[in-house]
Length: 189
Image 1: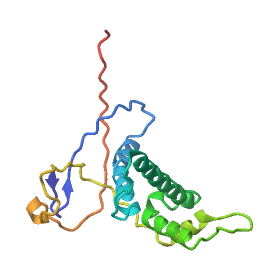
Image 2: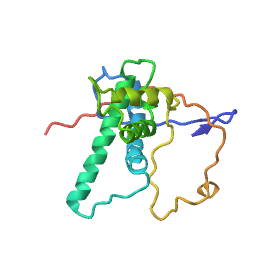
Image 3: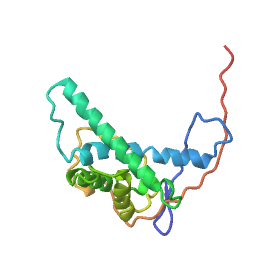
Image 4: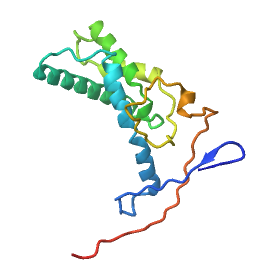
């Protein structure tokens, strides 16, 4: 890692992949690598946002299974609503749709029993979608830090300065890709 005169840092990473198809651009592989972080966001949405800090209530394995399926179905339905909302809007990345906004809009629809008795079609995605579009998240920045697994003996409540982090001004990341194609082949058996 090197630091430039204006305080920015540059690092070189080596991404090793099994994708050997030269038709797949290296930029796409790097972008997909950065999007792998999205699964962490999904877990947080399931655990913290959907559950609201509560734990599963069931006391039997069958009940726990049923609650987990209900959470996963609800999560998937809301993600589909977010995706459907942004599907015909090429200028909006689906990542900008807030899961929390969608969840609260869906809860409001259920509590108010909106659309329970309807003449023709029920447009729940439209109601949720309007809330999503009104409260879009900012575009996500490229993550530049590698994923680190924290040892279990370290408290998450330790002060940031004790962790050795120095928080300075944040700069948007730019990625430059240089391709060094190295193919290794196994000797015939």
